[in-house]
Length: 300
Length: 322
Image 1: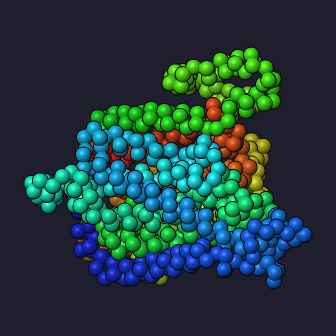
Image 2: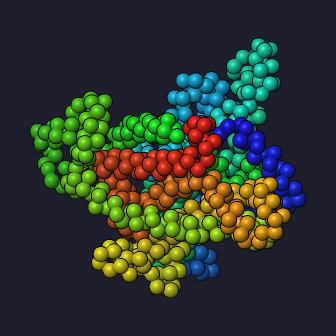
Image 3: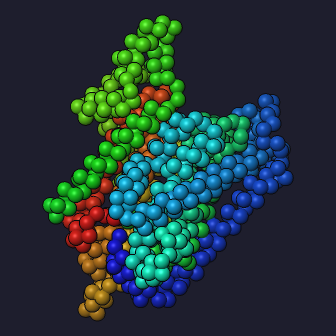
């Protein structure tokens, strides 16, 4: 995107929205609050799972398999008689862990690569951008599927695979920002003052490119949780017996007619988690970056 | 315009070349010996001679980069190899399943547009009202809901509680047109949801942008009715930026097809890809990945060209998103 078009849009937006934009910000704020509260609840659920869960999630009871809700098992039991509620509570651990860690790695790698591409420009930029383009034109889920199969199942490999997919988005965002910022006079001033490239990148460019990165972090956590559960749904996720929402959904799906809650409950949790991070990201977007106000996912 | 078109095509070819390298390496990284997997059913693996003959036949005894060149050359010439699992010709498998997946694609685009466009327009017209708030939240919901969960909920509702649609399976159009339509309603709806949410949000912001322009105010001042302002003056310019979202939405449709065909047991390309990953059937995996990418690159190329045609500024600026 060129900076002129961008600035056009922003000045235009600010001048035309007025009261409407304030109203919308308030609503967006409310939406991000809802997201934040849900995330907080999920984190509490994951951290204090042993105290919250009514039963051990891994204890099988083969006399009580595939039961509906009862007083003993509030959500019923799964195919080997484990308490579904406890497994759903423990399942928050895998989803949040994968979402947070893979996004953290993606952001670190992507920000670093994006800074270099944007700052160095030329051939470095071209090579880096063609690599990100290559990754981005294969749909994430399909690439994840092949990578997960190549690396083998397990939580570490899922995190590695999702990170390999996730960094490209950050690299593009940061590069785009840097291309705009590096033309500003204060960067020229820094050059003139003899600042090193490293210093300019991390001290002067990065802080001013952070707003869209923070928004992307929230969105990427949601996306990573979705990818992890999709992989688990296809049987390429964490190894049993670790409780995972996607895995529960996969097995529960075959018993949909007998015990619908077996698949519906964990699926609801995945949706809630993804939704919460998207809500938060949406609110953050409105709060941090007025230029992007009201737009869908940022598309260049 | 001409140099713009050439530029975009050259770029797409370059990316495609990179993708073939990535795809080839990924397929080779898959654990498990493909020969073991392939020959399990039809050869005696304890016999070393047979094994090495098989290796030679599939070219697995050569260095990896030679294998890549051979594979690429064969692939371009239409020799996609044979499935290690079933022994079928991969090209034939692909084209037999292609129409099924294309039908799903068409159906999901239909749902995306028929839901997404009106939602976006209503949100924009009634901006900052409660209706807008509800619709905007709905569109975030549409973007966030996992394909497989939405599929399960809809199967439960429309196949278990109210059994009006088949829970899974696919009926070819030639066999029974009505059953064919019934069998693709749920899968295509699920695949199209993400796109619908994206379209709704993008149409809303794009329309809001246009409705704030001076010439719309002029149209209002002239006393034109809101309806004709919206349809005649605002709709067309508002749709131009929406074109750019098609590429992104398309990616979701394509990856959605993998999950949806798997869960609805539809014998299309997505199902073929998932099964091939499970079976480590790398000729099929490679073909699927390359063709998926070709498809995405073609759609994005079309989007770029269309956008360049509709908005001359893009042509001058050169590459989209550069």
